[in-house]
Length: 124
Picture (cartoon, rainbow, N blue to C red):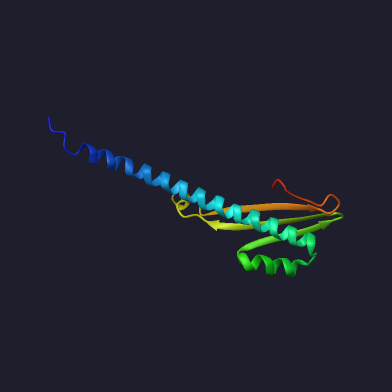
């Protein structure tokens, strides 16, 4: 019996699965990296806002130093300041399964009474 080529056939059959897994891991890693960047920027802005209260133009300048594709909302209520950052990130491999972009969000709040900064849950 001739066993030549069995490993090659197995490799050819498994190659798309391996490439799909690499793509998923790459996209997920890039998405987590961008979420981490948004979280750090949110914390930086809310900390800056707590020490040096400024308007939306000042916040926009701080955001533009890091990334120009970030939208933000800044709301101030009584003793609470809330910043929400949103960014759409293009998918590298998600286009194969019809996911062209990921919508990423980060939301932090600063309470002036207790002087604490905390991450808030994002609800649609």
